[in-house]
Length: 235
Image 1: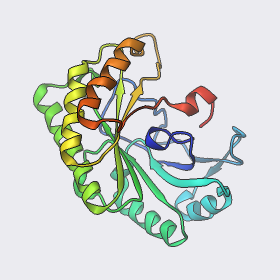
Image 2 (image 1 turned 90 degrees about the vertical axis):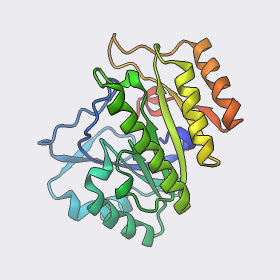
Image 3 (image 1 turned 180 degrees about the vertical axis):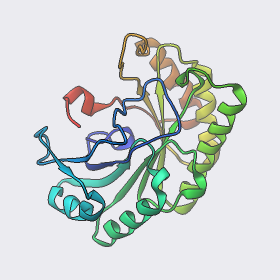
């Protein structure tokens, strides 16, 4: 199930391994030495290993396709770490009539190309255990550059920001302002999915306050979009 702007839509997710960022709420638990796996049938929870998935990927997508499919999503980890093979897959799938969706942390704007849909995950200072202000600002500027580049190419790009208990509403408001300066872009506020006792969700009142502040710049282009697949117990 999709999240963000297209929450609840049906996707085929292709998850790439690895990410240079170490967000404290990250749920990626794939080890580099694990074999690639594909769910045999959607929702079954039964997986088949593919030792040569690069060769078989397009055939796998064709097998999993259903009439209600919205798009094929490249997610991770960080897909743009593998941008060359990602571009090959994207071109082949689009030639077959699929819509392509990128989910990225946005720190590689120079590796971007056209996607039908794109989600850029804006990081907040509290998403990291130890990161100085200079390094954080560098990441943030790259994220904005990625949004601007995708927007200028005609991709349907939106921003997503994960909010936790200790988020600063004014910092999220400043994100909304910067996004509004780029163009007509939706901001998806995603309450964190707790993965341990140290990661706590944002209180309801605070969540609504954050959305109100963002609305000063984005009007109704602000959404609250939880990770619906987590609630449904799906991939």
